[in-house]
Image (cartoon, rainbow, N blue to C red):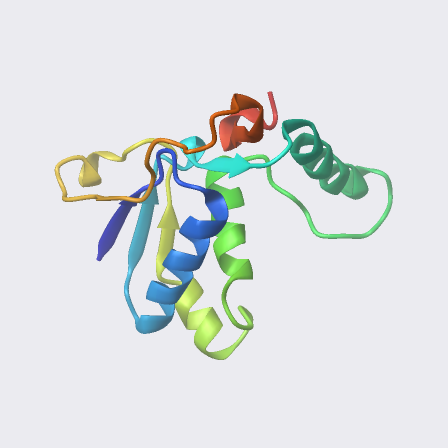
Length: 134
């Protein structure tokens, strides 16, 4: 089992790394999901998430988009897996767990640090998942 600390990890890179390991048969736990970052234009990122969420309440049919950071991370990983409804993708998706913060059972275990200090000098290009729905 791999325990990955998502602090300062870029969402897409983290998701692709995790998806590859899930397909190999690893069980993966991602902690600190609220501190995973999304790079890009802050305003556009917030608008996109709000647009996805507004489809649900306006009578239009569409997928439900969660505001919970652990579900956002898990859904991004799901998008990197082959068909998550059957076969390899379904089996791989069962092996991932995502948490906000660090649960007690994983406090003393060895963790893989996925993130590092962002290289982008412009703070307007970095957005943590916890900041999206504030």
